[in-house]
Image (cartoon, rainbow, N blue to C red):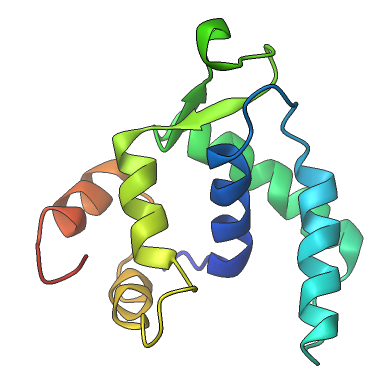
Length: 130
C-alpha cells in the first residue's frame, strides 16, 4: 500500500493552481510546508527529506496526469504547471480549508495506490466521495 503526505501534495497543487507567470519550485514549497507544520506545533520531517519528497511528487503528479505544462498563453514559463481535471478533483478531495473534510482523505488512504490514474478516476467518479 502506497502512502502519501496529503498535506504536502495539497500545498503543491495549490502552488500549481496559483502559479501563472512563476516557476514551480518544490524545494521552496517543502520548506514552507515544514515551517507551517512547526508553527502549528507539529514536528515535520527533515526539510531535506521533504524537499526530495516534493520533487518526487512533482514528477509523479506530472506523469500521472494530475498536472501539465502551463501554456505560454496562460502564463507558462516553461517551468510551471496547471491543474488538469484529475488534479482539480484531487485538490477538491484534499482541500483542508473545508471544515470536516476528512472523508476524502480516508477514502484515499484505503486504496493500494490512490494516485494510480485508474484508481483515482474510479474514486473521483463517485459523487459521495467529492
